[in-house]
Structures are given as C-alpha cells and as structure tokens.
Image 1: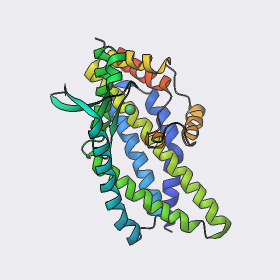
Image 2: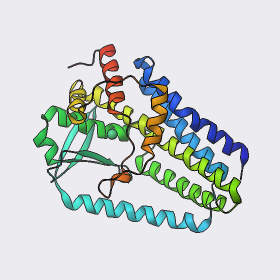
Image 3: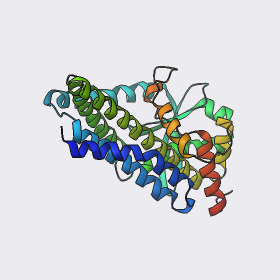
Length: 281
Ligand SMILES: [Zn+2]
C-alpha cells in the first residue's frame, strides 16, 4: 500500500461533488473547459486510488487485453448484424457515421470501446428529424469530449485500472477490520469518482449538441425526460452521487450505461448556456 497516493485519492474524490456544483453554477461561458477539468480531476482521483492500493499482477493484466479485444469484437458483431442503414452527419466540419438499428425503442447510444454511435429507427419515428439529429450530436459529443484520447484507449486504461483496483481491494479485505474499512472507503471513493466523471461527460455531450443543433437539443431533452431546469445544490449533489451508486435494475446492459446527472441539472446548464451565448435557432 502506498499511503500518500491513497489519501490524496480519497481527498480528491470527496471534493468532486462540491466541484461539480461549483462548475454547474458558475459562468456558463467557460463551462466546456471547467467540465473537462472536472473530468480530468475524476480520472486523477481514480488513478491515485489505483496507485495507492492497486495491485498490477501479471495474470490479471495479461487476461485484460484478450478480454477487451473479445468485448470489442462481440459488440461490433452484435450491433453490426442489427444495423439496417447508416447515416452521415456533418458536425463542426467533420463527418460522423451513425449506424441505424431496427428497434421501436426511441434511443441512441455510443459504444465507447468501439467508438461507434448507434440510433434506432424508433428515434426517427418518434422525434422530429432535427431533434433526432440533436440526440445523435449528443452521442458524437461523448466521443469528442474525450479528445485527444480515442475512446477505445480510454476504455482500456479504465478497465486495466479497475482490475488492478479490484485485485488490491480483494487483498485489503484479508487484512482484518482496518483493511475492510479501507477497502470500503476505496470502493466508495472510486464509485464517486466514476459518477462525477460520468456527470461531467454527460454535460459535455449536451454542450456539444447545443453547439451543433441549437435549441433542438434542449427541446429533445425536455421531451425525453419530462423534467424542468433545476439549480444544482451541494447536499443534493452528494446525495444524488450516492444514489447513482445503487445497483440499477432494468435490462441486462443497464450497468454498462454511465450514470447521468439529474435531468433538471442538464436543462439548467443548457438553458443558461443557450441564453448567454444566443445559440437559439
Ligand atoms: Zn449521454
């Protein structure tokens, strides 16, 4: 165990929800840059925790890469077989390909490990084409928010860190009550960092969609969530972060979906940004 790294990791992760509230409520002009900083701080917290207690044993590491390559191929094959069409979207001078899946469920998602964006036929049936395009822009925004790191590289780094952390936590659990308490603290801190990373990531994708598709991105969010803007508050942000750590039910892939901030917080930031910068239209 490397104590200084561990304690720094615990401290940084404990401050993340407070930093989130500060970023969400501050001047929207610098929101993109501040959210990226928040994302980086969350990754730093995860890396400090991994450096503090992580155990990079050779067997786990050598298994991680074939497992990831397998997941890459399985997901590509699975969604590739269900793809009925491809659409090209030009966003900020770059062409992005979106694969259309045949499904009545109106949804779009990004598979980070393969770096591909998917949307369903149901999305185009239920929403106006402009709103559907705004949602697709949001998904592309997830990939753009990680720049310059390709999403596949990002997933590999997180997966290797997570497996090292899990090995370290497992060995802490065998070191008596103090070890168990430390293991619980590390798991909680890693969870909080992941949630905060995801929240920042979600807002960044929203901002990207607002810049690409204007007010359609906001109307789509209203329509999908049925929420209203809500100013982020400190105590509630901590509570919501912990809530996001609960195991989520639903279909098999629910645990693969990154935790989202309250829809009201997303609308709050988007509305503030839209009014300040005049992105309506
Ligand atoms: Zn998203």
